[in-house]
Image (cartoon, rainbow, N blue to C red; front, side, top):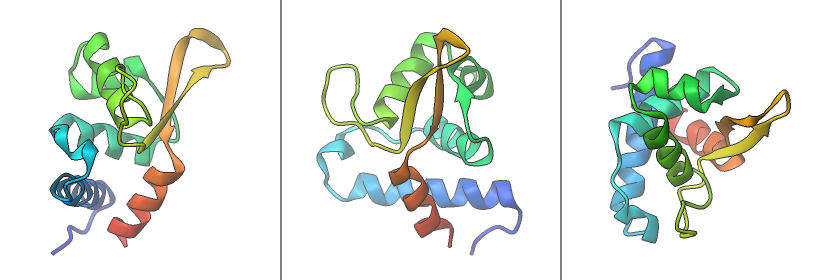
Length: 116
């Protein structure tokens, strides 16, 4: 049964998506699904773009840990191996040292499929 408020529905959808994703036996499934991934994905679902600092504050992670998580959720992780592709990362046009994170087309498509 799906919850009835928007944030709870997003938590349910992303948790369901990640659980199914990790059970499929894909190469990426070797990565652990983490509660912090769900928190980040819900936050990005509700906010079109967020900085690394903002996401670190929301999850309680350090900036280096948050950066590693963001790379894993994007197309390529730090070692150059495939990531999940659920978010996109771009430089902030107003502050060149800061990055903005948002759901990728794949992330939006996955959310629409599982939140429906």
